[in-house]
Length: 109
Image (cartoon, rainbow, N blue to C red; front, side, top):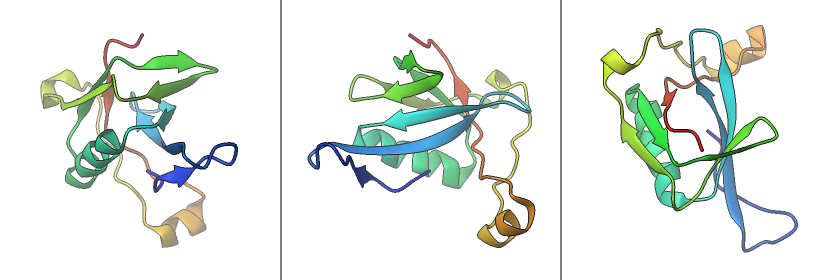
């Protein structure tokens, strides 16, 4: 999960990006614009809890989350794959792997 950044074209527009683990070997690029959702996803990432993300838009193979999106904790029974532990910065430099999140996307719109 990236920190919240300011858009180059409009310094009033805040955004962040992250990758969601959607299966054992697939990841979805995401861009978010809501600070509360950023905080929730960060907490779920830290705790290792699976999540459901509702009411997102998809464009150019990316998911976009805004103030109308919802992030809720999913049941472990809803996730049919194992979480891949995030790697440390040191191991990322050694292996080239990115951090991954344990999430599940539901009701994509």
